Image (tube, rainbow, N blue to C red; front, side):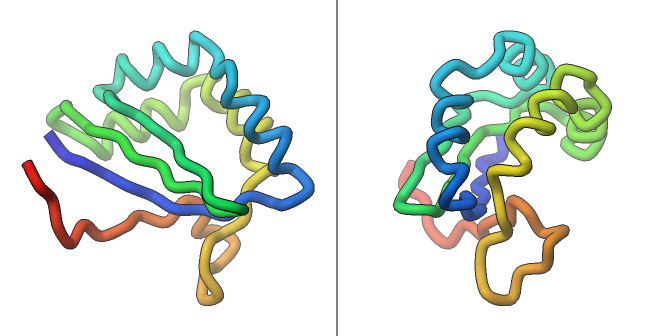
Length: 108
């Protein structure tokens, strides 16, 4: 099992929309995530910064992520959520979107 965390900023004027969308994530999106070995997924918000955390239980992360990227329901979901996000950090590039965090400590 891999633990992964990511960070992104939310566009301030789209914050309410992003939170509304995540108050009722589409069942087909949740099913696609589960089918590709994503579990224990949480997104936290602090002001205009989002932190996502999930656990990956599969054997081929890159293949599962590629399949998720090609899933039509996931693509439609991202058409709604992506405009609400902007890269985190002053050195971020527009393509960075959700930036992966490096784990430095874990209490098991």
